[in-house]
Length: 155
Image (cartoon, rainbow, N blue to C red; front, side, top):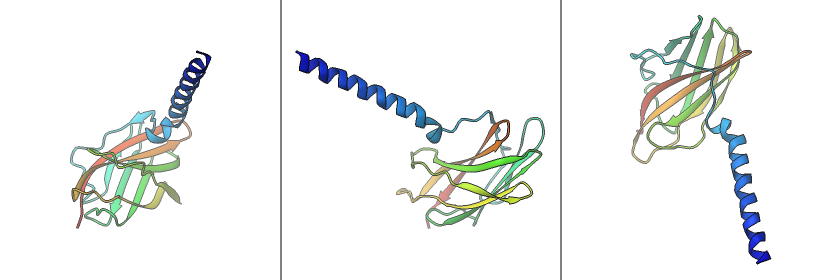
């Protein structure tokens, strides 16, 4: 009887530990934002940079090259933040219809509100994939998320 209670108590402690660890790590997997801004409907990252207006003034412009955007090839990314002072910029790539794991490169400040970096989209067995690239901009007072959608094709 005591052995069964001990096993049950250990099971409950392990479940509680998993819940606490999951809660503490959730911001890494699901980034929280103070403001989420939608880019204009006509935005097509496959053709040109896209820009979103921020509430209260300012803009976030995002660009990926080469175009068309390939999978499993180096991508050059640039984010230009105007009207706000950004301290950190990351781009969170996630599959729209399929979980492709954590893929969030941090871009480096290059001056004048510009941030640049490199990333890669993982291969998809279907040959094409719908993606959401959420640009995460941290300022001294807020975290802004701007989700851009695009499709990539293997080839």
